[in-house]
Image: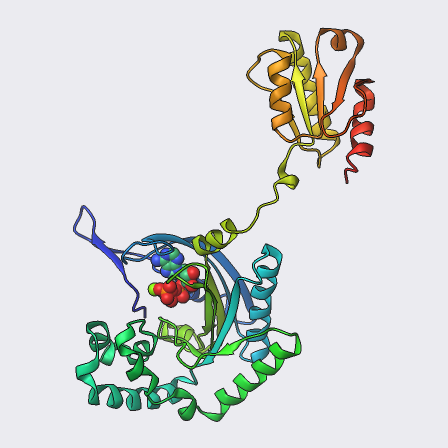
Length: 365
Ligand code: ATP
Ligand code: MG
């Protein structure tokens, strides 16, 4: 099924093992074996490590992580649009909307593609002397993939190749038109890229990729498409399916380049402890506060040291308040509270007032 860079090796018993290169085939197999496709549609997701024996470089690893989403039992362009819109919203939430753009294509039904495949094989066979080694190999195994070649010397040849668009069946053409309408209706921008073919040969109709210019040659962050034939191919009853996988490392690389606002991760309050007795009482107080105020980010000082050095750490933590628990406070069941960000005077609060004080001052939910 997969023409991926299979990570295959012999184990100690001489058994040949292959590490999974992607999640879709395994997801389909799990659905078939567990009877998930019998009555209802299924919307599933997975995440985990995948393995490919490729040349490691930035954004391309032999072990990497994918997050995948697959929908089974829906054949219309509405679910194609829905999944693409879902990914668009994800980029928006992550602040990456400006970094990625959508490329779209249709591969036609498998029948249309078979016919086109022959046209393509004829064309490339006639120009066999211009094919690089990879493409020679793909000429008969997966000729569509030649269109995907990144070899600059082959670009003219590929540019002049017959186009799938001209060999498309009407069903796929209508599906594609409707998908485009739906995306346009919600303002999702895209570019139709006739050379977008995807590496796996079980795709049909819709294929899409979210690409970026920010990661060099490893520009595809998320890729997906329709794979209506795969369930049947793996022994299930014919079931339309659509999904995508996104590469976590590439996503993280994009996020890394973003300015990062750490405010929402800083502690609200830093609890300083003076003396061995304060350690136990402080731990108890911290736990009471955490129990009572689940949204409070409280950092308890660990590691001892003078109040002066603890105060330095409190300041460096970015906390809004330093709360000091020393012998005097212990005796009086109070806490000394110092505003680290403003210039409100230091104050002593009864320990039982502390929760209400923090809730009010920090506007805790
Ligand atoms: P590419 O064209 O970059 O080789 P692919 O077509 O092989 O990608 P898919 O099989 O569609 O990739 O996998 C989905 C996503 O997983 C890719 O878009 C990419 O973000 C990520 N990915 C694929 N291979 C790797 C890898 N070796 N290292 C890190 N991420 C990867
Ligand atoms: Mg690849």
